[in-house]
Image (tube, rainbow, N blue to C red):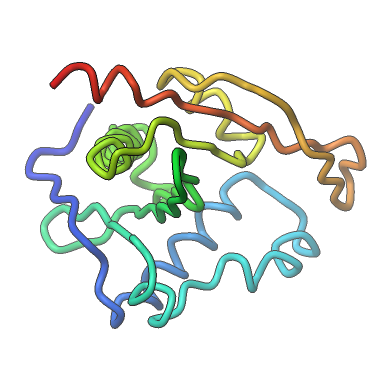
Length: 163
């Protein structure tokens, strides 16, 4: 079910704290050990400078921020650096809307593919959106020494050719 009147817009620097909270709550939703969440604290912190210097977009409904993504681009590909949704808003189409927006954004910039260094719990979502697993990185954490992060690619040529 998609929320009506979902607005996707560029994030403002003063929203950094709200985005940090979303990133941390989203990651904690997957029941990672406290030690892992603490180790990732810097990675899950969004600063106002980060928002000013990067392509950070958020989804809001009735002025409540429900999720966001960060797109990092290079010559012929871009990286989906972050995509987080509040746990209570998961399953409502917000992640799908954010990812579609990111794909369109990247395609509009002339990018041909998007890479995703995915959280293992998010891989199924990305695969359902057309991503293909091209590798994995070993990323052990306390309680899960065999943990890997899937490396995925979304080809954007179909978006470019559809226009």
